[in-house]
Amino acid sequence: MAPSCSAVVVLRPAGLGWPVNNRDVSSETERYPLLYAPDRWEWAEIDVEFSTQLPSDELVQSVHVVGFIGEGVVLCRDERPDVWFLPGGTREPHESVDDCIRRELSEEAGGRLVGDFHPFGAHVGVSDRPHPYRPHLPHPRKAWLWGWSEVALVETPTLRAGGEAVTEVCTVPLREAMQLACTDNAWGGEHRLRAWSLEQ
Image (cartoon, rainbow, N blue to C red; front, side, top):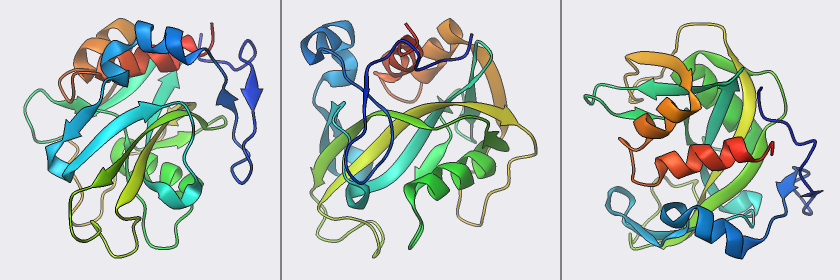
């Protein structure tokens, strides 16, 4: 079964209007120790921590989607050998978070949302860089937003010049998705498990 919010207590933070899972954070950190551990992302020159407290829209630099099709999770692979990742990416100038989700899902996976996008947390940190990654993006404090949605794969991925060259898109069972997700980062498996657990 695809995720459902029917068994989840939700809040609607001001300015976002999105459902948020309101769970005991201490039990979450015990269940997902890798996800909640402080991390260093050298590629972005930033120290980050995961939180279920959603950032303001202005802080969101990038957004990624755990996309469910039935009991499967959508993953993408680019030209790096044996590295799988979730669809998502960086916001364009004047682009809303919702528009970014839809564009990135289409570009990287050839997909579209068939349900609401349910954010469940974000990695937040302060960048070491003297300037923002792109002029329109937040700096130095910024966030990578994560959420889940039911999706459909409807077309061939289409990326603009400079985007990742996606070579394969697949839908795999949760357990396999957890294993493949760890090829991109150590906490990837816990990330997918947390998205799935929101239906419990």
